[in-house]
Structure formats: structure tokens, C-alpha cells
Length: 344
Image (cartoon, rainbow, N blue to C red):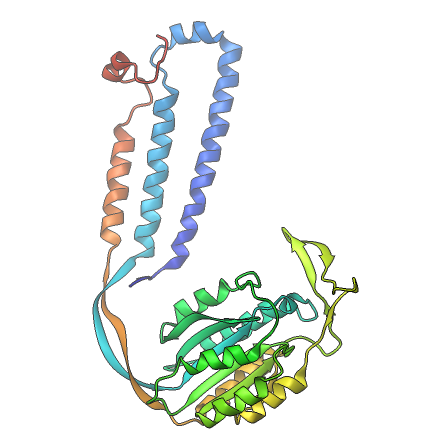
């Protein structure tokens, strides 16, 4: 496990393309100036030790030194000890709808991106709870098992898209059934948060939710989209090419089905929350979790993080030292080897 102390120094890497650009501009200017001074063959006789390769090598070494310096300033640390700690919290599984209807843009930027924003903000407000992620469309897919690693959860969350599952449709019952396998039998508070537009094609989600409720799983549903609905864009490289059509050639309008989501939540002793206002959603979820009894569990985490900046700083100093003593003119022994087929 690793972490970075001062991530702002990564911006120093932006200097490298600038240095390369200045080098290329300077080389072009020198080439134009040399052309005005004399012909190429005559210039080689006047300045036989000029080496473009050595100049390029010097600038490459300088860029590598800058890269290592940036890494040293960031101060990367590596966890050297894994220890077990006791925590109290709730197991929360997020089931996120990734069907094509989630591409509708009746809520900005679209329903799926809004769902990701909601889950990210909820995770940001958690303390010691464990989280898991499920993606579902026509089928459900385990995206991330129960964990206390919130950084990994948010990384997996951002990678989710509507192309990750080939089976299209919206089968909420599949997500509920998969969620049952996520929880430990010892966990007393099991929470499933379903984020969807509510278009359920299975018609048995309410029954499955009732069974989950009897098993101790409380289901909370968050609706994204509008009841007015919108078309489903089909894009390529961010450009809308068409809108999804049904078998009759009619443009499909997808709408938020709040009633289905309310029924599912009610059957599993949960509540439905409209997801249009992120702040209100996060506040309501936080209030619900705060009122729940916490279960103690063991979790492993890294401790005793050790700084590794000295390796990168040493490499940067070594490369700068080389750059200082690396001359731009041809080296005599390299000239004799003629590795680059230069004509002398």
C-alpha cells in the first residue's frame, strides 16, 4: 500500500513538455540561422564536433531529473506493516444501474454520472462503515466486495459505464440477490442502496426485496432522472449520432419510475429518496446511518508508512550531475565508433 503526502507537486511534471517545446523551438531557430550562415556541408567542416544527438540526450536527462524531483517532492510512502484493528459500522452495498437508460440527460450531466456523484459524496461522509459496489443491468455483476478502502471504492466507481455489461435491461431483482452474498452472517445492520431510474424489466423486484427484508437487509432506493423523461442518446467520441429507437422505429423515452422504487424500499423496511439534490440525499443517508446500531468487526489496514523520497531525490541529483558534465559536442571515442552512422 502506498500514499502521497504532497500531490500538488505533481504539477511540476507539466514543466517537462514546456522544456521539450523550448528545446525544439531552439533547435529549429539554430537550424535556420545555420542555413543563412552557410551550407550544411560547409558548416559541418567549420564545426565538426557539433552533435544533435548529444544535445537531445542532455535535454532528455534533464527531463528525467525533473520527473524524479517531482516524485521526491510528492514524498511517496509505502506501508510496511499490516495490522488488524477493530471498528464499528454498517455494511453498505451500492447497487448502481448501468443500463442504457442511465445515459438519458434529463438530469445533468446524465443519470449515470449523477449516480456516481451521489455514491462518491455518500462515501466521503462515511467514517468506519464498510462498502461494496454492484453494477447491474439485465444481469448483476460484483464490482467491489465489502471493504473499508474508500479510495479503491471510488476508483472502481469511476470506471463504471453502460458498456460493462452485455446483457441490457434493468433487473433490480438480480442486484438484490447478488447483494445477499456480500454480507457476513454476524452483521446485524445490512444496508443496500439502489441507485436507478426505476425502470424494472423483471417485475419481481418487490417480492425479492421482501425476502431480503426478512433476511435483515434494509433497502434504500435513490431515483435519478425526471418523471417527464428524456431520449437515450447514442454517441461516438462525445457526439450524438442518434437516439435509441424501439422495434417499431419510434424514439424511446425513458422516465423515472418512482413508484417502483418506493415499493421496493417499502418491502425491505427502507425509504425512497429523490436523487436530484445531492446535498439532501447525502444528509438523509447520513441521518439514517447515524440512527442504526453499529456492529463491531475487524479490518486490516497498513501502518508505519515510510517515506521513499530519498530514492527519487538521489536519482534526480545523479541525473543533474550527469547533465552538467555531459557536453553537447561529439565525444572522441564515440566519434571513432560511429554508432549513429554520422558522416565526418
